[in-house]
Every structure is written in C-alpha cells, then in structure tokens.
Length: 193
Image 1 (tube, one colour):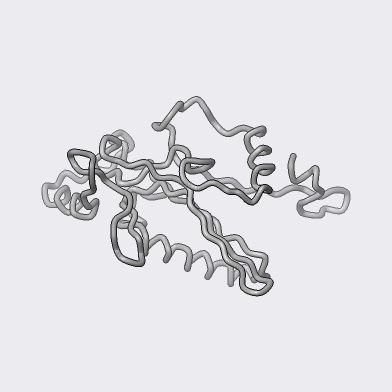
Image 2 (cartoon, rainbow, N blue to C red; image 1 turned 90 degrees about the horizontal axis):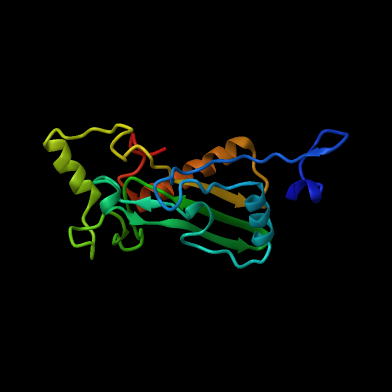
C-alpha cells in the first residue's frame, strides 16, 4: 500500500507493481505468540522509517530475537535489531540485521563476548562453543524440533544507492556473511537458518 501510493514498483505498462520480499525469524516463544505483523504494522513501519530516527534493539524484526541458545531458552539472552550505514561522496551503503542466532555475539574489534549464553547465575556469560564441545563429547548432541534449538535465523540486508550487477550483489552478500562469521560464534550451524 505504501509503495503503491507513491507509484513505486516494477513498471508493467499499465501500472507499477510493488515487489516486496519478506523474511522472518522464529520468535514465537518470546512475548505473545498471537501477535503477528499485519498490513497496518508494515505501513506504519514505512512511515516511521522516514523520520531518520531508526531504533536498534528490541524493535521491529528484533522484537523477539535471542542468542546463545545451546542450553535452551532458560540461558539464552535477548538480542535484537542492529544496523550501520555510511556515505562516501554520493554513494550510500548500510546494513541491517535481526540477530536471532544459535551462537554468541562477539565484538569483532576486541574479541569480547557481548551477548550470548548466560552462566548459572545469569550475571555473566559462558561460551556456546565450549558447551557444544562438552555436549558432543557426552554424545548428547540432538537437534530436533522438540528441544527449542532449531529455531534460529539471523537475517540481514545490505542497502545501497550504488549500481551493481546481480553477480556483484552476490559477492556483496557473501561479504555480509563474512561479517556474520566475525561476530557470531558458532555461526552457520545446521540449526541456523
């Protein structure tokens, strides 16, 4: 509706068809599982995106996100939505990511864990990688849909006003996944979407 009102979309001669892709994270165990995005929420999100005051954290796609889930929801930590953008001359580029990962989150500059699996007292962290090794050594590794582990999806988008070919955009997407690998440990597991 928002795009149609602004005549934005793929030109098919008689009209412009707004092409909108979608993706989502599994967050139904956080908050009220009956609350789902609808057309009005999407429209409001488009309006709010125009105010140049975007929100990071538990907003939008990041509302129900969590990380550090190897021991289940009891030791997982709330995560959310993050973004970064810059401009060089006339070229603008940005990335936005909803982090709902199986693993822990690290500051890639100093290697320090900043979010992830909580310790027993829930006042600090333990390492998902170390817990994964312990579980594997005890032959207790089981990723089934019944144990709260296979519901992880970190999704993102790279947004730019620069012109790229499809092949070049594929390379840029690969570079974005390298960013995931620098910040999420473990990453790209069989239980990450």
